[in-house]
Amino acid sequence: MVEWRGVRLCISMIWVPLIFCSLVGFAQCSEWRLARNLDRVLKSSGLRRAFVGVMVEDLKTGRVLYSRNEDFLFIPASNEKLLTTTASLHWFGPDFTYCTQVYATGTVSTDSALDGNLVVVGSGDPTFSETFGINPDSVFSSWAESLKIRGVYRIAGSVVTDESLFDRERLGYGWDWHYLSYWYAAEVSALSYNDNSVQIDVLPGDSVGATASVLLSPRTSYAKLTGTVLTSSPGTGASVDIWRTPSTNEICISGSLAVDQEMKSFRVSVSDPALFYAHRFTEILKENSIEVDGEPFVCDSTPVSATLLFSHYSPELESTIGVTNKGSENLSAEMLFKTMGAQAYGEGTFENGARAVKSYLATIGIDTSRCISVDGSGLSRRNLVSPRALVKLLHANFTGGALTNSLPVSGSAGTLESRMEREPLAGRVYAKTGTLDQTSALSGYVMALSGRPVAFALMTNHFVEEIGMIKSLEDEVCRALVHYSPRSFGPKGGRHRGKVR
Image 1 (tube, rainbow, N blue to C red):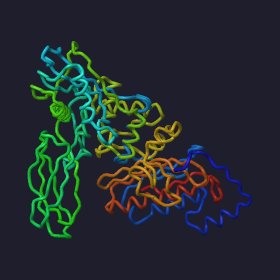
Image 2 (image 1 turned 90 degrees about the vertical axis):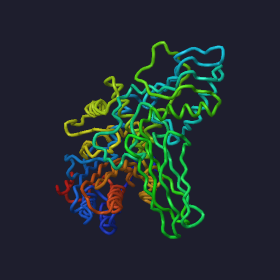
Image 3 (image 1 turned 180 degrees about the vertical axis):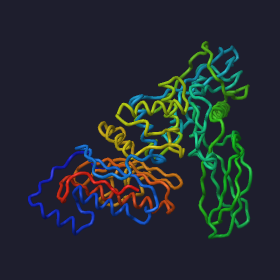
Image 4 (image 1 turned 45 degrees about the vertical axis):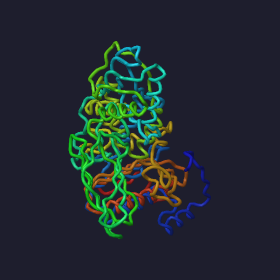
């Protein structure tokens, strides 16, 4: 990974690099040749029928090096997370931590029973999962031990969750229905356990025709599995379908798995995440020898007379957005989005999250009439943003390092780990990926070989080619940017505008 610092180059003869650029397509090249290289990549047959927007800026000078359709609005896919995570840094600061609190509504009797409920009050913390390095069942077990230290071995009431910081609109506007069974479209709540999802592992049987083993993790009664997967002949691969019935936790599984296949894993969303949280906490209490008399439920408020027992703190926000951006974690982006809405306007709603993001964008000079945000993750196709707005946001957040450090890195981290793995691209591209059907985006920073930092936004909508081809063209754009040098050797200095289409 390269360091973000300038490199001063001394050149004695102007014609030497000019000839070198001419002989080698992506040799270190000046602004005008960079524009020619980008034009060549963007004229690829794979993009001729697509709608493409690009903007490139030299971060040292603020000079726009290349632009094409930079003021048009594009569906950003997960590039929307750039808006969400930078806005959250603005509203909360990099050191912010979430605090989830556990209360008791009664007193402890002489027979070691809590004569009331245990109430967990959600703060919007998205980090209560292995994704963020936290084992939530271990946290629940530690709470159980804390209760026993206080002499509590029985809850006469129930485990209750208070998710009132957020409203109960749990799905984003414009999310496709066929997404909703899967972890990347998990329901949004002020309380999150295990990314509001379960994992299903499928292993083939010992012989053809045998029933495959289907395992649920965590082992909870909250989700119900139905259906069968059969073991098929060697070489037939995997054909497993999983579907969660909407508004229920009945998960239907069917299909086949070849006898020579390895285990296949699937992550499935759950309905009513706050109830899932209460249900699983109840199960862990019972596993730790604490009886719970009542059934778990969700409440709208916590009594003012309740007694605070203990608190759980999340990692700092800078770490949280690192996981969110590198892994493109949709649920955490949505929870950040609603947390901002609650902080700024009193209630965690999608609408208030959008208002909070727009308020931040206005402070860095972005024309908010040219941006539409309806969710925090980019899963909705109703989000719209321009390449110019993204580059302006990248420019505003370049210093300080919080955004840069949160981004995937070419060849080494996050969703770019297996892209641009070879020199000179490896470790020089820090950028957020984005993918939906017929939509791809890549926006971030490139450290050129010359030492010059460049901000760029590349957005492609309405293509019919395979997504792998579009991603390869994005990589070629980054290759051109890596070879950018600020020296102006061309016949025309100044900004190059690509053909508008």
